[in-house]
Image (cartoon, rainbow, N blue to C red):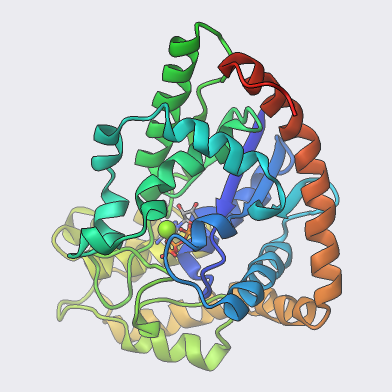
Length: 332
Ligand code: ATP
Ligand code: MG
């Protein structure tokens, strides 16, 4: 059976990159796979989170997922800290994965910044918790944005090493599912940086909670260059901001990027941006409205998460019991 695990951090500011790179793809995969969608609050606290904001963000991300079309009745939607298996297996993987492997992870380098000595141990060990998230359900497929590919490779290495160390065929090696179009949406302020929840500038991203006026303003202010739009894909080389905006248009409209290039050939950015605003508002508007409606009933959201956690635990706990046997721990 094909089982998906995928997660999103409740770090606030769900954005267009999360939607096009992750959540929209989850909605499509629901028909084909058994899905486990997790709000990874334990990952979020690898960087400081204000407790009240964290609680709010857990609910807001849940609302965003449901508003975008994730079905919590048919699939499992829950937050990570409610299911102990994640922490249990993460510790074991801390003892399986090697320092050298983690030292190569680019996300740590990006997020720790200049003062690595001041980063939390959790930020460094983050990929081991992610491996545990996936493997505690023996998930076979993991839809991720391109930014998470390296972590997924580490999860495969860890599964393989666990199997080798203990001489078992226990964990499957999970496969990535990367959406071909819009795998990586870049910042609106800097075409070399990915759009990110944790970017300081709110103008770098379009949030799923932004209203039409804010979306319009952010797209109008998005960085571009001085040339009109090119006639070919090659013409986008060395023009990361133009490439990103055309890529966003393609992803939102469901067209190939080359079709969009042809459509806007020779146009000025000002004309293209007007069309992009209309398209973005038409896709995000209804999601935004539904998200706000869901956020008015937090009891309902909490009930969804508790029910999801119970169902997640029912899958994970027996797998952890087997892991305890393999490692030589006594079962509780
Ligand atoms: P943070 O800055 O807190 O790490 P984030 O924006 O990277 O936040 P995550 O919660 O880490 O968001 O990632 C959730 C999902 O969204 C992952 O599957 C990730 O691959 C995807 N994703 C994140 N940013 C982008 C992006 N710019 N383009 C495409 N997909 C993305
Ligand atoms: Mg991230």
